[in-house]
Length: 131
Image 1 (cartoon, one colour):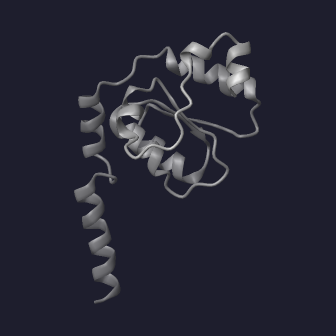
Image 2 (cartoon, rainbow, N blue to C red):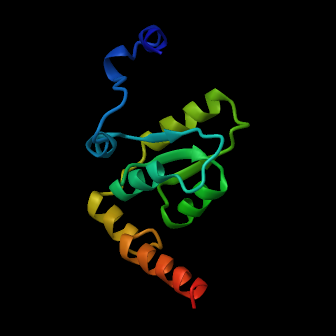
């Protein structure tokens, strides 16, 4: 990856950080999160990026489709698209206006993924099962 970045003249613009204990500041400063996953339930990393206002380009899967219903800055692509199509879409998304953190937090608060709503929904399901 480092060689490809250098060959493309991008070595000074790319950081390969590896595993970190606190990824949120890095994710908040990112221009785009790319999640080309084959399988996901509800992708927490994409949800975290959306909550921070970081745009996401993700595989078109049931879990990412559900998130995209609530977060307009989560964009879906088929894994059948080639690398050039993904790169072109990533470039387009990077050039769009990123939502402000306050806007992202407000949007998250109105979704079923907000902590209080999620807890209430889980409790409701649990209560019905044990009634």
